[in-house]
Length: 255
Image 1 (cartoon, rainbow, N blue to C red):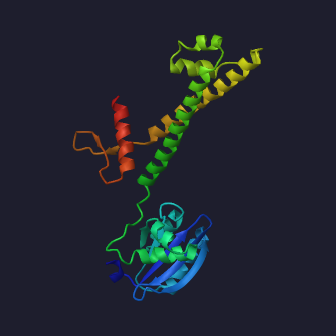
Image 2 (cartoon, rainbow, N blue to C red):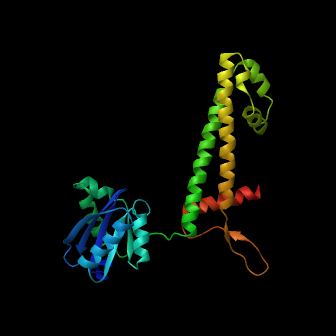
Image 3 (tube, rainbow, N blue to C red):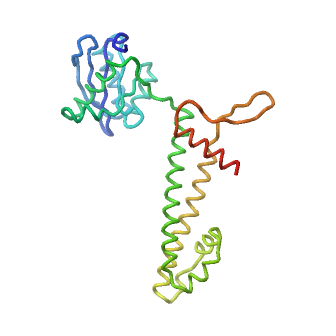
């Protein structure tokens, strides 16, 4: 049990601007010290200073949301040789009791005492870089899809003269054609406004497509080469989102 390995647990409820701290004595379960620090490098150093003074000996930080608002503190503490444990969202406890930052920090600390083992925050480096690239690429893909849907919907209601002109074009031809139109030369107010909207959407789609391809180029599969054989494989480490990302990359490249 983790309780047998530690003397103190420093629970942390992190937020954007401040982090609430609560130091719990493992032997008694009582709260030794409570504080709040800024979510900054100065605040992180202050948190470590308080822990060293109020929780000497074997201690661990239990941070709720260590991959979100607590990411900065987690990296700082790990770099200082402190043991950091990641605590899941405390929804159940919040429904059954009071709710404030100090109480959440205490709950975060006590939640790890009954565990035989607790998760440590996932390492940064290449994994964090890949996660950031995937998030940005997914945003570009979703925005591009939304722009294409708007473009298709708008094409349905365009004047028939313009529809008949655009109907035979492929998607690539359509985007090039609409991206280069000059609506100011049209006298018809409705047609001029429609063309401006279509041009904006077409340029948006092309820009997002370029952005998505640039981000995809930064994402590479894991090498698994041996001798003269050069090949790549999926990461079987258990991260389903990253495995899905690598799978999509390989399928796309095979096509």
